[in-house]
Picture: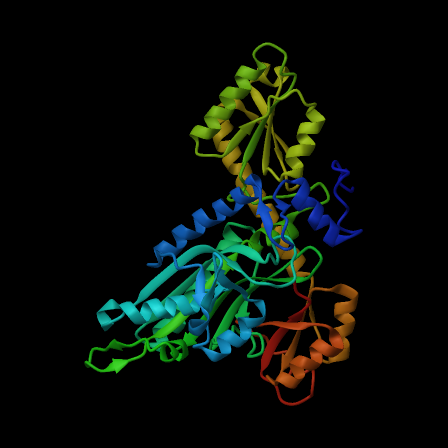
Length: 477
């Protein structure tokens, strides 16, 4: 039975997915538009989600020895030019500062599109000996890239973290590159309830200046891919370009090996498009600004507000983010409002509930109601929040697993994508021409060469030549 729609201002995703997404962002008060195209305002509710993501993820970074720093916003053009591949990749997206007040600057400054060059300059200044290594730095900041825009998915100015590390050996740097990818993957699955596919990007799709780029790819409701996080192994290319050296254990000068890794507020877009429904947001409990909303029923009757307030205070004392709505809005309006905002759990209590020493818990993800004794409130709420996360993850995982298709030719891959969307897996020879042919003829880009390889045959689906790699293709945001 279809779930009754309660928020008419939100377009059904089956009618227009892009409009549904925009409606949810606006109606749930996540963002607002500014006077500059593509530069958005994060409203308190939207920014609170990012704060929760940041708070949890930052603790995970620190567990692996990462320290937070902050680099300048402006990058001199001469510094940006030092790594050829890197600057070529970002030059079309750079915004430039040309004047300081009324005076024209002698050199243009780019507003950071990413900060590799700044970190490299700093590493070159502070690194001396192998005893200084590894250096594991991260910064939480905004960056600016002048490109096409969409709420959360592609802001011109967006919030993110970018990690930069240097290591004495290639093996250590490669190991850390994959370790950080796994930190991202575990975060997406265990915190955001978003299942991921882990793998390596092709040469065409890797980060500019990197030797290897690793990615986590997620599938949205509309079966398009979202690149949710990337981790890059730089080798010693940046170190040589920026003259970063250290004295090794044999008292010889050598270059360190670098990594870089990042996720951004595009994760919020991923949450919306993975879990949301036609009534609005469905938020994972661990990052929801409000985890539990307490709604008193017939609050004008004696003792109801006082009892509801006590329940709220008990849950706050248990470490949860809780709100009680004692406004004069109708119960129907309140239920629709907090469903639209994606609050994971609703606690309802009225005169009859209180007489019976109970209250009703309602899960946002599936609408299931559970009657619990007031004495068991804290344990029952914790259990229900775990069930919300589990239910969200299982539903998203089913969407992913049900929409991965196997193909043995470009024509078959195109037919599967046109009919079903999702990921199409094929064997691939590794040649750029075949990657370009899949894009041109089937409209799909390479998503990743998954770590979990399968043998689907021994020939490339694009050219018929021998192939030993399985690759995922898809249409991506």
